[in-house]
Amino acid sequence: MTTKVKSFMTISNPAKLIIAIIVTAALAGCSESEDQRNFEQRALLPPSGIMAMNANGAPADGGEEDSDDWQIAPEFQGTIDVQTAAFPNPVSFNSTFEILIEIQSFQSINGLQVFAFQQPNNLIGPLFQQTGELNPGLYTIRPQQFASEAGTGNLGSLYRIIIYSTRQEVITYGDVQIE
Image (cartoon, rainbow, N blue to C red; front, side, top):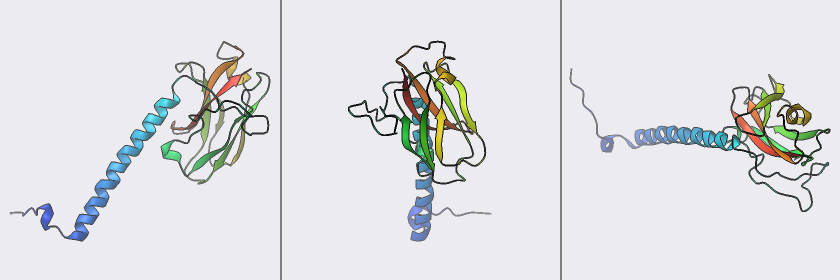
C-alpha cells in the first residue's frame, strides 16, 4: 500500500487555517505555562517593599507603592482579582490585615491556601485554607500566625504572603511589614 504525502502548498486553504490555529494554540499554551512558572519563581523571591495601605483599604498618602505586589498570575487572570491589597500595611504585630479578593469565575478555582515567609526556604502555613467553591470577600490574616513562627518577631520585618490554589499554583503574592 502506497500513501501519498501532500506538500503543505497543496493543502487547501481551510485546512491550512486549521493547522495554523492548532500550532498557534499549542505555542500559546507553552508560553502561558512558562509565564506561570516565571510568576511563581518571582513569588518565591525574598520580600522587597510593600504597597502601603491605610486602615480603610486605600493607598496611604505618601506611602510606598510596590508595583510587584498583588498581581494575578497568568493562569488565573480573568478568574480572580485582588480588589484591595493587604491593609493596613504596615500592620501591627497584635492586629490583623485583610485582603479583598473578587472571584470572577467560580468554577476555575477550587479552594485556596495562604502561606507566608521571611526567607524563601522557610514557608509558614497554611495561615488560611479553604476548599471547595470560593466566595468573594475579605480574607483576614493575623501577623501573629506567621511572625512568631518565623522565630524573629522583629518589628519592621517584611514578610511575603503567597496565595496558592489547592493545586499548589501561585495565584498572587505581596509583601507586608510588621510594626
